[in-house]
Image (cartoon, rainbow, N blue to C red; front, side, top):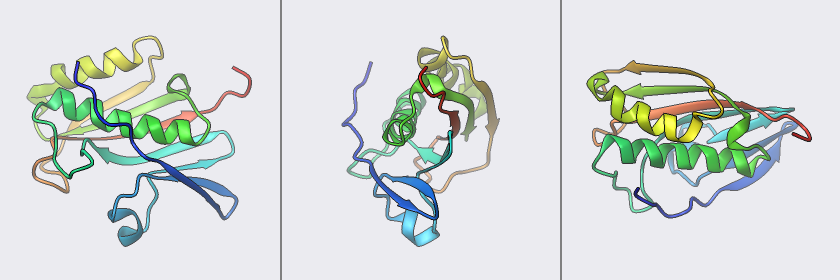
Length: 143
């Protein structure tokens, strides 16, 4: 299995919420955060599998792994865990690759079994990206 550099996540507070940022130049330009925690709920924005140098892994599986790595790092930075994930959404540019993408989802979540959606989209923000994921987590105190 491919390993990727650990994401650098910064957190900050504003408006009674805690935010996580991966340092993407798009975050301030578009006006969003990688993830937001309010109370026990963490919502992670659409995340592609981009590497620190701006490239994308070649396979859909590795792009999926990287996107989930970034999203889950944001969840952890906000005090959550992988096991707190209750919903995932996967937007793929080629639904014929559903088994490749789904296998990675299964590696990560077979014991958690969140509600999951996978849909095909025409394209993503970068032509090299083949998947974008979102996820939601509910932090269970003391679990």
